[in-house]
Image (cartoon, rainbow, N blue to C red; front, top):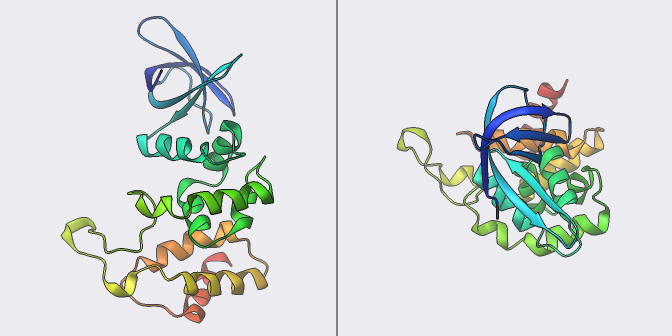
Length: 204
């Protein structure tokens, strides 16, 4: 199984890149964004072997690779759908969507329908609490050794109220969620109405 590739990009488009290794072998790898030709690159790889095909999916970090492999364990979610989710939605927002039962965010990825999104939430709700990446509702050390206070814990009720308010104003969840995550990591405890006001200022 291929788990890691380093080499020079000899071709790249919006879906795949060909990476030439020092041994003279060129590997075609699915990549989330186009790579710059003639640049050296290193990717963690998930090697998917099927009866008639073999596909390589490339990731910049081992955490991204592990998350992709967790997604494809969900019933009905294939590699293309899982890679589409990571490429178009992003791991942080996928974790947020699962945590707060937000089907619409997952549906925004090409190839992912309502039933698939619901299955992802159902299957991974418990698993993501054990991840060391993405969102956490526990205290977590940050730079300088300072711990996040109790007031900074992610509040599912707060997030849902803020999302509902923003939806009513015509804003999409996938645009609002990253802002909510960022502001909830701050030092000030926010109420839903305060958070909505802050987000509206940024969006307008």
